[in-house]
Image 1 (cartoon, rainbow, N blue to C red):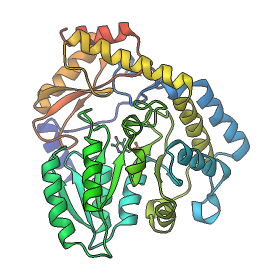
Image 2 (cartoon, rainbow, N blue to C red):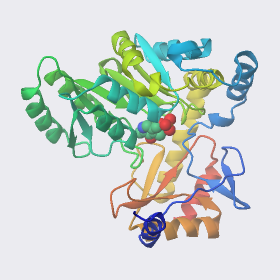
Image 3 (cartoon, rainbow, N blue to C red):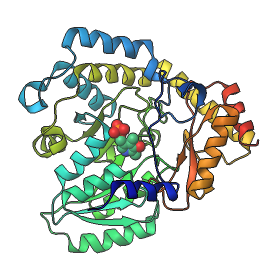
Length: 382
Ligand SMILES: *Cc1c(COP(=O)(O)O)cnc(C)c1O
């Protein structure tokens, strides 16, 4: 039998072993780790809503009113009012006919692709798609085709060959992210939409890192580009900028109803705690409010400060990849920032990113001050 100890030693030797880091503080600008107070540039809580008083009190009130747990899956007796309220609100905010909520974004990706697709269908994925999208595609049994990151020419070639073969009873879905989680760059959504219309296929866009950050009401890059209505399946998480947890799909009613019938991560899982949905709803409401607009402005002003100090090209999102190359150099830079500057900026390594593209993944949030950003830049030598 293969030895687990040996496998761990191999990971260690390749600087690829990971360990958990217990954090003894709330999700704020500083993380208390191992007795040290570190300035945190690792969180996806882009607007600082994980500690927002309205989000916390919505959570607490819903626990009082609805209890701690849902007791069963959604289709049995676990569909409580807060789930439905969140789904209606999402559908309205995303201007779709309906929406469905999952326990988290991972479950939403896996459950949607595996629920809507089967053998004989095709998923056409951007090469840098999140693990949850790849896993959903694999689980579906559909044929998987991959195009190089953001490469529209290669995407069109795949569309030509796939749609030539596709029968009238099959589905073809293009899958991409609005903001890519490890590179922080964005997808050419308008051009992809042109292609999806030209070839008559479906489009799924994962807005995990776009929600809250882009758009006049914070509904993501698709809102910013006014193209939401052209996206068949709008996927996202409520665990990042919404500050809580949960995953969603906003789409036409028939797709949502099909997911209720076919999505195994939705059907065979206890419904999320009702309070999670109530708190996520409060987070979304803040994202869409005037306060949300101010938080977004603060976030983008922090991104601007970072770009000014490092004299880098203006980043396209709150995710800034600081490229290093090999895993061990990335680890030592991250360690140096932590030990000499009390800064948390984790190294991201294979298999999360391709081999030899290890980097620090720096995330900026609206909760950071300009002084926080300046400290980071100076620790990075700027
Ligand atoms: C984080 C993330 C997910 C998963 O969402 P969770 O709610 O954290 O499970 C899905 N897609 C992308 C691109 C992500 O970054």
